[in-house]
Image (cartoon, rainbow, N blue to C red; front, side, top):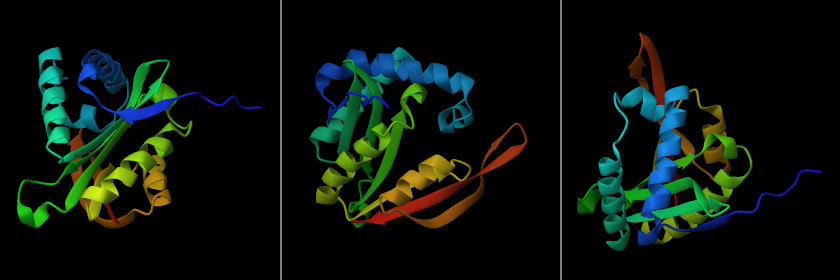
Length: 177
């Protein structure tokens, strides 16, 4: 019998800076080992100072009502982050939010991503009319997760990423809420 994992999903708060930096540092180690989005796109990893600045900007965006952000914790440690960030500052695109989700690799495929995504979408429905996301076309697990929540493929950026002479398409997905 599979043991249920105990976890908590909650808002990202100002008190989370140290936990957030630790979480991002663990993700950075994973990025060196796995060819995920950030490793492919970024040449260098973010410094602790950059992480502090990014965290403060994220918190400011949350307080302004432009971002929904939730973390999932296991044993009082952040193991995942999910955000919906308002797409641009223009009134014409203010109804669109861009989804981002990351779970530490050792916590994937345990239902945490689904639980986290459900919470963020629930709140996102109050602030946005459309939630969109971009995902590697080869990331079948993520595409399956997004479809489970009603996202539909709305396009492809062919050969959008090029690394070591290999191309990766990006699948664009949208959810009208």
